[in-house]
Image (cartoon, rainbow, N blue to C red; front, top):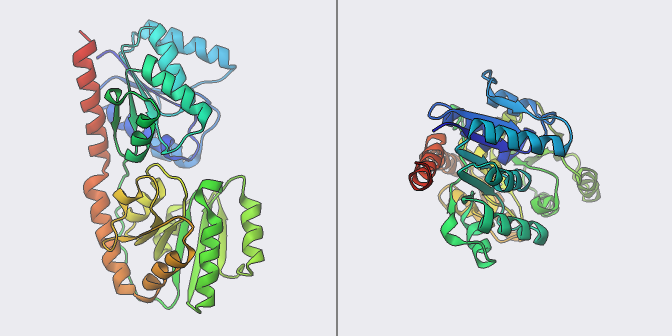
Length: 358
């Protein structure tokens, strides 16, 4: 195979960005592989650390959209790329349209949410049905939902996100104050307002705990105001884009996710890899990560009372936190490893190559 190109919008912190790096690092041990970053000036130190020192096959694009489109057409044509893999709408468009016009034989797009806006749906459906060779979803709910909205099923598959499971041994000392953690962007779909309502209810029950929110986003000030309105400032820490987010997983005792929309949650995967019990809303493919009564609890969205009830169980029972945490780490190690993720992509590439590459 001459060349496999992976293209991503940027390398700021995010699930798609992280998965593109995992795929690039591992596919390059099998194929001639390049990673192209469309907005080359948008990069995060965490993503660069994950990428490592071998950057000779990473291309950071600059300039106007037109100049970038021309670059892709020339690069695809001159290199005679066999495969292009993209993750999000912008690079799906480039992969589908420019890739096909330039003669890329296998064009694999990516769809990463269980819900997408109507205008993105129109674009993704057209690209998937008429221009892309195949699309990879990272969650079953999104696949099922969009097939009902007209995406061709036979050109679709699910490959779950992966994670590098950390070599971290949790002490599980019984603590008087339990540390609850949430990590994610400050956007509507993460529904931190419900999380804060839950924390207020736990305060009324006179439980001893601390709550930390790690993230950033457009709703930061609104979330801070909501915390203040609930008069729980002393119990809640809001941490903005820390250099080392992983120390917060290490110091936590329980992970909380109150999202109303998810694909496959990278933050829940990270929490499980750090042996944290999880309380999460049953959205997207969270049920593939969190097994009720095994490594955590699932609730309905915005169900403040039930979420508080489940957190109270874990706050009061350090031994149960230990059991759930160890079960969660086993689950993520066995089912969401980087090796399994790459193996699925290689299987897909080889099956499509057998059809279309002589």
